[in-house]
Image 1 (spheres, rainbow, N blue to C red):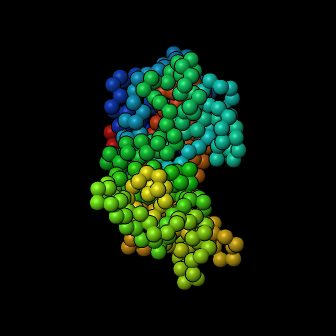
Image 2 (tube, helix red, strand yellow):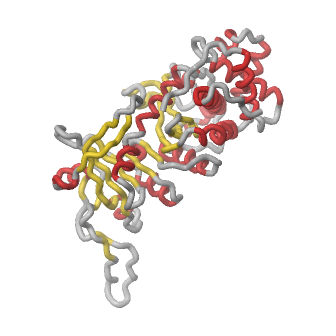
Length: 409
């Protein structure tokens, strides 16, 4: 699952392939100047150099001041849909990747000041602390031959959504309202699920897996998932049975929701009481060198408490996957999954451990392609930049898979 690699200043043939690829990706843009600017910007992202913000990028490309003004307007104000560009890249490249999963995550983009849309002092997993940053949620296809972003959504804290003057300065559309990160991820997943790309189980960390509404919505759309969960999450264990209570008297309302015969317990408590025979060592990861890595897991059918007790939903069984490496004092990780009851343990374990590959994607998107280098203060501009970075990433992925293959016009 190697990351695409940035190229040196492209040779003539590579530039021709890049022009053909970007031309196909931006064919839906209505104006020729938009398509020209897209190619200039993507080329600037790909070619070697320092910071990938607009001014130094166009300086390295020896573009004119007029081109700078045109590209700046194209990024910040031009009314084109970045989702169309991301979709074109996804439908072209994702089928080449041997897709195993879709990974949901979010990343922090460090910022100075307070005017970039969504910026505030907030916790960022990227920083590992609270810092002044933007947070963007993204979904990525992960396969045996590479990765590819499938969508981006900038997280807007409530204080931003409620501040009309800041919204106006950042050109945030009136239709954009506050949404949690799981809600943003859900919309991106729903959007990409309607494209011609391979569907696969959705993976995410505890910020998403602990959200019962997120899991319920995925399941309702018949999308599979393996989502990390916190040890404190409450479930009904495998021994629990659910029955619909009798109604109260002859005239009482007939009950419809099944109730459990016992109290719930935390994932930590359930793991601690599992018998020794409930644990098995299974392969869970293959290194780039081909080495098989195994660990000790338990696989248990459970029912999450929150949907039953708080939302009055019928009980729904999920897989609880627990990793407890030998010699450790406590389990290292927990996951909840709606994969079928007959799913092989090794597949559950491999999917659970696959999410880490997203870090390689972010590393390239930021370190090589300038995802975190956009300096504009426009909400649309941020998403336009992310779409063009995705286009550059998609081209490099194809180059790595088959450097000599002609690109479709």
